Length: 580
Ligand code: OXD
Ligand code: MN
Image (cartoon, rainbow, N blue to C red; front, side, top):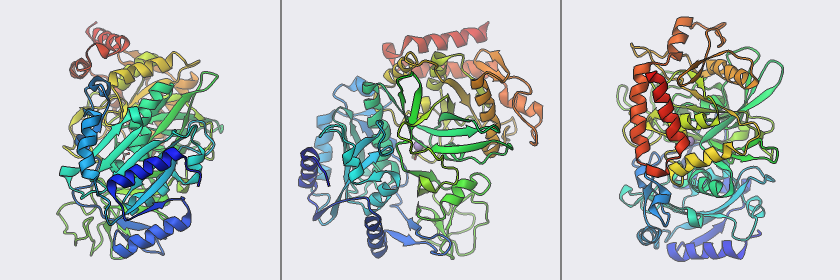
C-alpha cells in the first residue's frame, strides 16, 4: 500500500496515544469485509438476518445511550472563537486536545486499531478527497466500507503527502459523560470518542464531508453542502439535475429516490445526503456525491413512501436499532405491516404492544448506493453532474408555502439562511420544536455561519448562469392538523414546476416572498387534491410572515457585523414589502 511517511507518522502517534494491542491496515476488500462480519457475528456485535429473504444483511444494536448524533457534544476547535461562530460549540484547540488526550490515553488497550484510508468522491474525480481514520470499532470499519471507498484508491488520490483529513476515533467507554466529537479544521483533524453511532463515528460523513470540508471549500472556492442530488427526467428524456438541502430526517432520502406518480417523469438518484459542488471553467456548477452508500432512517420507510429504498435494503445491508421478527427479518414503525407476533425491540427485548416503539425512531440502514434501483447511471462520473437548481426544504406545519422561487441568487441565499424546521429524532433533544437551520447546515457548518452566507454570495458572482433557487415545504397542515399536500411520489409534480421554471415555461405569480406557482401551474391530473387545497398550501399569510421575519431578525442579531449586508437588506426589503 502506498502510504506516505506523513500518514504513517500520524498513525504511529495515534497508536502511541491509544495503545492498541495490534494495528490492522484496511484494504477495502470483500475478504476484509467478510472477515469483519465473521468476527462481529462471533462476539455478538451483529446478528445475522434471514439469509433467504435478507442475504448478507445484519442487525447491530447500539448502546442504548448512543442512538443519535449529539450536537451538544460536538465542537469546532478553531484558534479564534469567532471563526467557529455563535452557532457552533467552541473549545480552544489546546484545551480540547488536553481534555480528549486524557480520554484517548490507552483507550484501545486490549483492542485492535483499524487504519482506514478512505476516499470521499468517485475515483478519478478532481473533487474527491482522502481521509485516514483509525478506530477500535469493527462495526465502524464495516460501515466505512459501505459508505466510502476504502483502500489504495484513497491514498492514490492524495495531491501531496500531507493531503488527507486525519480522524481519530475510539469507542472509549461509551459513556455520554466522556463523549466528544471535536473538529480542528485548521489542522484538518477530527477527534471523536465515546460513541459508535453513525454521524459521530463514521468520520467520513458529517465530520469530514461537511464540517471539515465546508472549511476547506471556503478556502478553495467550492461548496460542501448537506444536499441530495437528483436528476429529473422528463417525457422527452431530458434530465435536469437539482440539489436539495433538507434537515435530518425530513424526507431527503425519500425524495432522492422517489418513484414518480406523474406519468412520463422519472427521478434518478445521484446522492441522498451530501453534495460537493464546484464552479467549472465555463462558470457552471457541477456536483459530486462524496459518499458511496446511504445511511438512511428506517422508520416510515415503506413500499408506499419509498419503494426504491425498500428494494435496495434487501441485501448487503447493516441495520442498526431496528426491531426483529421471529422470521429474523427487520421491522420498524411505518413499514406498512402490523407488528408481527413475537417482535423483539431494538434493545433485544420482547416488544409490548402499546408501549415504546419497537424500532428506535432514529434506527438506520447502511447500504451501498449502487443497489438503489433509481441510481443514476452517471452517479460516479468524475466530473459530477451540472446543477440547474437548488431547493431548500424544511418541515413547517405553518407559514412556509409548498413551493416558491427566489427572485435571484442573492434572494435565494437569503431564503436558505432564513430556513427553520421542526426537529426530528435524528438528533437528540426535543422533537417537533422549530429551530433555525440555515441551508440545513446548522449542525454541520465547520465555521462561522455569517461567513458561510458570504461564501454562498461570492459563489453566485462567479457563475455564468446561476441556478435558480426554490423553497419547498411538503409538511404544511390545515387548521385541523391535516397535511395539505400528499407528498412522496406526488412531490414530482412540484419538481416538474421547478424544472419548467428553470426552462422558463411555467407560470408564476410575484409575491413579497418570491414567485409562487400560478393557479393551474402545478399539474394535479390524476390526483385527489382540490385546487382550493393546493391554493391553501401555496398561500403566503401576512401575519405569519411578520412573526417569522421577527424571529429571523433575532437569529441574525447574534452574528453582529459579520452578517453580510445583502442578507440584512433582503430581510429588511421583505418586511417592507409586507408592510406596503
Ligand atoms: C444524517 C443526518 O444522518 O443528517 O444524515 O443526521
Ligand atoms: Mn443528513
